Length: 166
Image: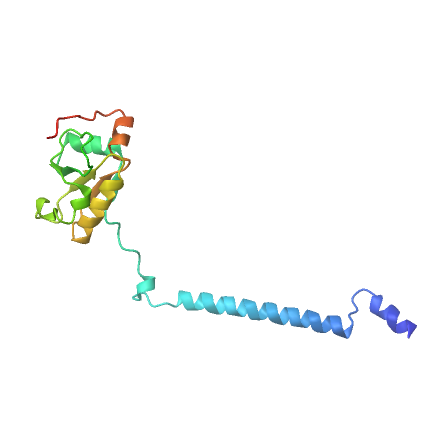
């Protein structure tokens, strides 16, 4: 019996129990690897026309910086809308004041051409984002939002007008 015990301690020699455990581990690892490869293969073989394989829809609007807006204002070809309530100032050349919380109801005041370029702003850009999302829902496709609102506009060194609004 002593010879058997010594043989089990020799390098490279496994007991029947250790050998079974090792085979079991390899079998589990092989099964996991097969499952991973199968799942990866299923994803890769997806039909390109299926909804999951198509790209995400384009953003409803484009964020622009104060410098972008300043450059655009040099050759203005868009409608500039302030959506902030209550009135707290405006950027020169503003065309319309449409309260953000009435964006859906006031869509008739926007250009009839749903492809017309429209730039929207408010104080911080929270209200203007709400407005442009509403207008995108009804089909407007050329929407721009002043990222950071007129707070960012002023921080970039551009003037904010304070006109009497009655």
